[in-house]
Amino acid sequence: MNYLLSIALLLSLACYNRAAAEDQTGRGVRTTHDLKIQGDKRSYNLYRPVLPKGEKFPLMIVLHGGLGNAKTIEASTGMDAVADSNEFIVAYPEGTGGRIGKKKDRRTWNAGNCCGPAAKQQVDDVGFIASMIDDIASKQPIDLRRVYVTGMSNGAMMAYRLACEIPQKLAAIIPVSGALGVDDCSKAKDVPVMHIHGDSDTHAPFEGGVGEESVTNVAYRSVPETMRMITAPRGCSGSETVALSSSIERTIYHCAYGGPVELLIIKGGGHAWPGGRRRPDQAGDPNAFSASQAAWNFAKQFTKKP
Image (tube, rainbow, N blue to C red; front, side, top):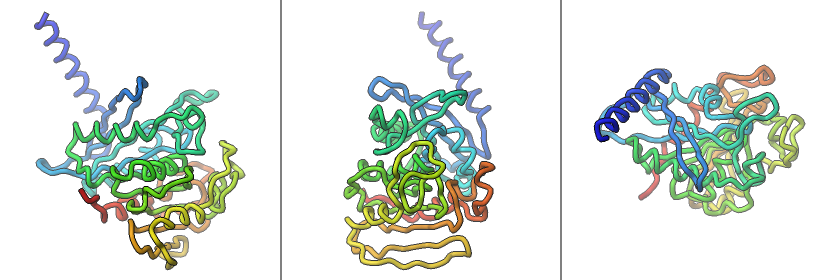
């Protein structure tokens, strides 16, 4: 019996190693991991660049948008290439959902007032991400003082919710094209925030409300109101805005305490991940600015205090 179990174990390990070798992207390796959360199976993809031994590295969590999935957000953001150059590990967790019409693997996050089945069924996505961080720490050499979250659209909203509810686990967040979806975020006051948004977004409008091209019919909070709610608990008293280029405007908020807050506005930008692989309907968005590189440049400044 022990002999048969040993053979089975060796065969399973061989299959796992072969799958990992075939999942190479860039210079590193991508693997898929499963978790049980309240009896439900959840999963995430992990990208690990070639890293020096004997050190611990930052973890960047990238959350897909509504009706997206881990595979699409990995491909569209180009975050793996940034990780290769800067030596950090990337996690791409999966929301919940499935087939919608003829389209497969369409997933959403319960980010508060949005989105889809995840919000309607009150899925515990906060618990899932918290458990995922612990799971990754048990398998990979990550520095738990340097865990960052970014996300697109519904994923940006989820990044905000994580900062609001598990701020002790996060060193910074970088929401892209998505506003705050919960009504109380005072606990996030020590978490640095850089929000990136196009001022011509027709899915999650900069000025809030239901977007002309939104598929959720949710009235989103505006970006100015989101920033007001994020900065209020930090004792902020004004801001300074500068043009980084003809298409990028940066606002830095002057806060008495708590984590720094910044807003990057993409002039003429739509509902997109700036600098990523774009859909045809995003052809007008600026492509010179990389949200992935900007997310890392912002995040790397921060190490959470023990």
